[in-house]
Amino acid sequence: MANLVVDEGNTLCKIAVVDKSEVLYEASASKFDMALVEQISERFQLEKAIVASTRAGAEEICRELRSKIERVLQFSAHTEVPIEVEYSSRQTLGADRIAVAVGVVCELGIEDALIVDMGSAITFDIVENGVFKGGNISLGVAMRFRALHEFTASLPLCRATEPTEEFGRSTTEAIEQGVMQGVLHEIEGYVERVSAKSEKKNVIFCGGDAESFVNRIKNAIFAPRKLMFTGLNRILEYNVSKNNI
Image (tube, rainbow, N blue to C red):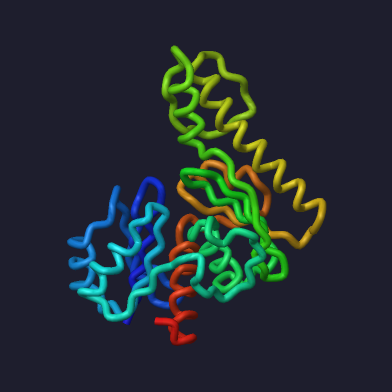
């Protein structure tokens, strides 16, 4: 028996089949597709599901899933999670942020970490002694490129590349390295700051843009999307154990 994990984010709807700590299948699309779930259910015996959405579409997705899966949990600000959360506004805390923190603590067994999640936005979250303390939110890589293009008269739209230590010798190179080096220096600043306070802090990289930067940060742990999926699955199983669904 496996579980279905649905994470509807700002730009993509990501779906995974998870069995305990193993991601058996994953896919993504611009929006939720029940036909895809029906195809998945032919390959895997789905027992339970969890749905997290930043687009206010979770209720409709849950209704559709209940035609195929008996127990479906809608992740919300009121959903119980297996770690302590010290955040003053749970209603606005993104499901991806808390799910990754749960994955770090419960799956990796790491209780002190700086989590750098590089998606549409870049989040810098702190876990101390297994407790989610909070964090900061910054512009994502693609968002920075779009801003330079859309809010100026003539700058071209550029794409992510490898950050170097060089200065650009053309407008395109200047934009590319301006964005990529800017993000790198921002990450390095956070790493230096938390490392100065605690040498036991681990640096965890995840998200679609993480691969471009992880090799530039010493001793970083790279976990692209698995932590979000397994973290949401942990939250699902925790609520099942509490008879909340």
